[in-house]
Image (cartoon, rainbow, N blue to C red):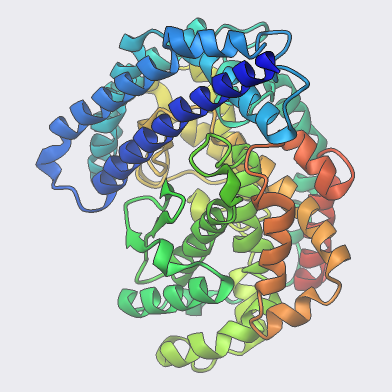
Length: 511
């Protein structure tokens, strides 16, 4: 009995430490959200110091001797990461995740984590400036610093095969670079063959009306309508504008998203908004009993991206979705869409054409954009590619994979914010998200056979209920691989994604 009391007290104390860390992380996220939305430009220096200070405080809390002693008293170690068998599933998952982070944090010196926070805060502002001026040389020295810090992180964390492994592991726990390369190989050939058939088909899809004038205020009004309809709760979040769309969690009842609008290209705003809405629905659907713990988070970025990509593409670019929303859209933009029928609009938003901008890419060629970034990141980390040579390397990869070359840095190497945030290793999770999304949606269709009918009438309650029960509510309790097997009955299988693309685009292009 005394042993049980001691274990309970130790676990309770560790949870209190974790709850404090979660609050500090949310404060840090709030500062970062403000920097990307409303912060004055000249405040970046002090904001960088604020974020560095917070990172240092969190690092000290996570790596404290007390945390280590508590883990030890709970029987947690390298060979027993989930502690005693006496704990329930959620407690064992909590200990697994806390120990995983504890091990990573204790391997990184405080100086390194605070300097990374400082440099990335500064780099985000310089990236935005460089992108606005389409001048990579403005951002290059900052990326050099971030790369040097990232390489130091990889060395501190250690690896057996590739220095990219510990970076990838930050976003997709327990995934290896070699496994990811195998996954890419398994479906890349089929993907390229499908793209070739589409591009060489005789069918040409008219997309000119998507590039008419779309007032951004009206776009925002429509975006708000769509988000509310699919289930996003505006009493627990908000929609703002930033240079690059993102979603951030500031608390269990505060999940905010941003988007960006293009006055002369409709797709940018609406699909970016739906994508971020998918992330937000995941965060808001996590079980209340996990709140204020590190389990109240997506289990991996691949699973997180499965939710955003599912809502953006499988649902958001479907014909039933626009059977419901197109009349309202058409009434808001009568000049651009007055003569456009539903099927023409559906085909246009799904037109396949190798393009420059990842976030605006069709869902067939999208994975080539990810492969481009994955290839460059591996070369950066291995030392085969220098930062100064990035624009040329980007253009060459773009030519090789997509058959086109960016006319400038803004449409090429500077288009994504991720590297300015130090997020090397993140990009591959988008492709994993695509694969997971198709596999999850197949399981959803089996459980909800009239799903198209529900979408057509604008009823998303059953979809959201299913996603929350199967994927959202467990948070990080189950690792990505285990969650996939629980939901679908098998491990990640790229065939579901390829089958989805084949069925959809064979119909659109008559191939």
